[in-house]
Amino acid sequence: ARSDTPFQAGRIPGAIQFDYYRSEHYIDIVLPRIMAAEQIIVYCNGGACEDSILACDHFVTLGVPENHLCLFKDGWEAWKKAGLPIETG
Image 1: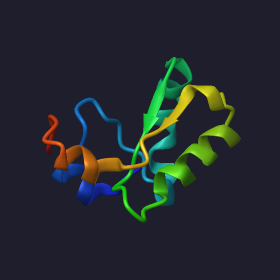
Image 2: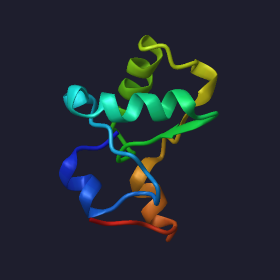
Image 3: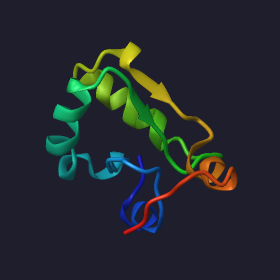
Image 4: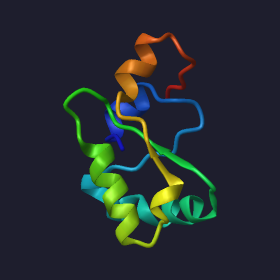
């Protein structure tokens, strides 16, 4: 649940971009993949950012089962700080 610039600068490997504030640009790509998945981990930048919460709420309104959504509340900043693998570009 991150916008273009932060997503391109770094993300969790295999992440699919979804910008809640521009959902119409992403939903046709994201929704079929979400519906086919058993578990979806949603994250944003972390800290005071609430974009991942908004994205989860939006997915539920579109029919994604709530129990398939997992919110990584500490987000990107915690992932990066932990020294875990990242992708860029």
